[in-house]
Each structure stands twice: as structure tokens, then as C-alpha cells.
Image (cartoon, rainbow, N blue to C red):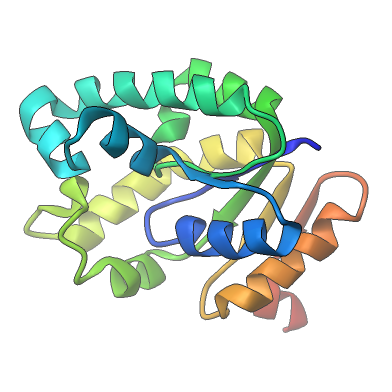
Length: 181
């Protein structure tokens, strides 16, 4: 079985949905950020503090390369994994890529109490998230086989939508509630 790779911004639900999807499919779940933390024995914020974003991105690249060589796993990636062209190529060829799309408002709501987000240590997190989305959204879309909107949708409903989309041929986009309006 091919890998199922979840991409999208922080707060889109990649880890939560990934765990549920893996359980439903009876596949192992891997999270690239957790892999990096396990390998280094350090938290993501500490890696950012000590090595900077560039040091973290290099570690992320190595982890993604190795994780994408596995077979039959559900992989949740970090929000910035798509920034490097070589990562996008590895992700694209490493399995079925699902972009979990969410709004900046939803990201703010889901990440407001999370102190493990180094890029949100700013006086204006909304501005940061808006800027990140402007750069990253086209990159997520570039590699996505499936696009699923997660705003205000329970994780179990999103998982059912992913399972349904995985059974349909060709590129697709599911806008959840938006598709009903």
C-alpha cells in the first residue's frame, strides 16, 4: 500500500486526523515533527532556538526522506515541510498527498494556547499566519492529490471524507460544508 501523506498549515489537524486515519486503515502513524524530537531528544522550539529555522529545516528534510521511503504509513508533516523543493518532490513521489486546508481564523483558534509553535512567538500571530499561508498554500496545492477543507469539521468526519476520496480516481477537492452552499 502507498503511504498517505498529510500536508497543510499548523492547526489544520494533520496529527489528530492522521492518527484517526491510521487507526481506521490499520496502518502505522508517523509524525515528522515527533520523529525529529525523538531523534534529537529536543523539542521543536529548542531546535529553532539553538539551530535556527534553517537547522530545523535540514533535520526535517532528512526525516521526510526517510519516512517517505517507508511503505504503508500515514505521515503527518510539519507545516513548513513544503518550503524546500526537494521535500516537495520526495512528498509527491512518497505516496498519496492530502492537503488539509484551513483558514487563518481556524488556525488561530486551534493554536492559540499551544506554546510549541516557534513561528507564532510574535506580537501579531494573525499576520504571521496570513504571511505563511500566502507562501505555502500554492506549494501545498502543487503536490496535493486530494484537498480537504477542515474548518469547523470534526476530525472523524474529515477522516470519513478522506476515506471516500481515496476510493475515487483522479485529483479531487472537498470543501466540506462549503461544497453544500
